[in-house]
Length: 295
Ligand code: HEC
Ligand code: HEC
Ligand code: HEC
Image 1 (tube, rainbow, N blue to C red):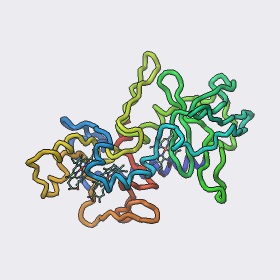
Image 2 (cartoon, rainbow, N blue to C red; image 1 turned 90 degrees about the horizontal axis):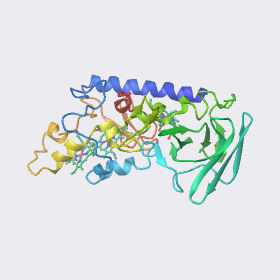
Image 3 (cartoon, rainbow, N blue to C red; image 1 turned 180 degrees about the horizontal axis):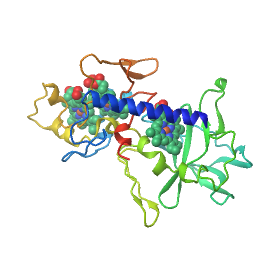
Image 4 (cartoon, rainbow, N blue to C red; image 1 turned 60 degrees about the vertical axis):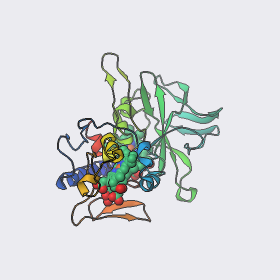
C-alpha cells in the first residue's frame, strides 16, 4: 500500500515537473490544452513502428525500456511470473497460477467471492514488479492484486506477493481486483498506453477502449506524427533550419539554451540539468502528462 502510494506520489510529481518545464520552455505549441499534444489540423497518431525506419537509434534505445514494457500481450516472451501450478495464499484466498496450452491462467476469487479460472490477457510493467491484466465482460480489463516480484532472488524477489500485504480485500471491496479501483480502462490506461481513448458507454456501462500503441510509444511524448512523416517524405523539404527539422511535430521537447539532455549509461535515464529525466528509452520515469492530461 505504502509503496503504491509512493509510486503514485512520485508519478504525480514527475508529471507536474515535466508539464511545468514544458510550459516554461514554451515547448507546447499553441492549440494544445493542458499540455496535451493537440491533434492539430490533420495530425494523427500513426504508431511508433512508423518512426523506426527513419529513427533507428532512438527506436533501438526505446526497445526494452520501461516505456516499451509498460504493457504487453501475455505470452512466453513477456510473462515473468511463475505459472507452474504455483499457489499463493492471501486474506483467506488461495490462488493458483498455471499454464494451459500456450496460455497463462490464474484461479482466484471472482466478483462473487468464489474461485474461478481467468486467462491473463496482458502483462503490466516488468521491473521491479510485473502485474497482470485480465479481460472481463463489458470491454473491461482488470489489474490483478497479486503481482510478481521480478527482482533477483538475492534481493528478495522471484515470488508472488499481494499489493496490499497487510489487508484482506474482500470480493465486494472497490480495491478488489474486480473492483472499480483496479479497472485498467479507467485507472491505468491513459498513462501506460499511447493515444488512449476510453470510449465509455454510460448507457450500457461498457467500454470500447482503443489505443494506437499498447505501450508508451514515441507519440506519447512527441505527439501525433502523421504531419511530420508527410514533411519528412516530401521531396522539396528544407531541412536545414531548426524549425524545419521539427516540421509537423506538435511538441518540442528539445531544451533551450542552457539545458542539455544527457543520458546516464548506468541508469539509462536521460537528464536535462537537475530538472527531470525523460528520454526515448528512459527506464526510471514515465512522464506522460501529455497523454494523461487529456483524461
Ligand atoms: C520518413 C522518415 C521519417 C519518419 C518516418 C519519421 N521521421 Fe522524425 N525526422 C525525420 C527527419 C529527416 C528529421 C530531421 C532531423 C534528422 O535528420 O534526423 C526528423 C526529426 C525528428 C525529431 C527531432 C526534431 C528536432 O526538433 O530536432 C523528432 C523528435 C522526430 N523526428 C520524431 C519522430 C517520430 C515520433 C516519428 C514517428 C511518429 C518520426 N519522427 C518519423 C524523418 C522521419
Ligand atoms: C499518472 C500516470 C500513471 C497511472 C494513472 C498509472 N501508472 Fe503505473 N506507472 C506510471 C509511471 C510513471 C511508472 C514508473 C515507470 C518506470 O519506473 O519505469 C509506473 C510504473 C508501474 C508499474 C511498475 C513496473 C514498471 O515497469 O515500472 C506497474 C506494475 C504499474 N505502474 C501498474 C499500474 C496500474 C495497475 C495502474 C492502474 C491501477 C497504474 N499503473 C496507473 C504511471 C502511471
Ligand atoms: C518518455 C518520452 C519519450 C518517448 C517515449 C520517446 N521520446 Fe524521443 N525524445 C524525448 C525527449 C524528451 C527528447 C529530447 C531530447 C533532445 O532533443 O535532446 C527526445 C528526442 C528525440 C529525437 C531527437 C534526437 C536528437 O538527437 O535531436 C528523436 C529523433 C526522437 N526522440 C525519436 C523518438 C522515437 C522514434 C521514439 C519511439 C521509438 C521516441 N522518440 C520515444 C522523449 C521521448
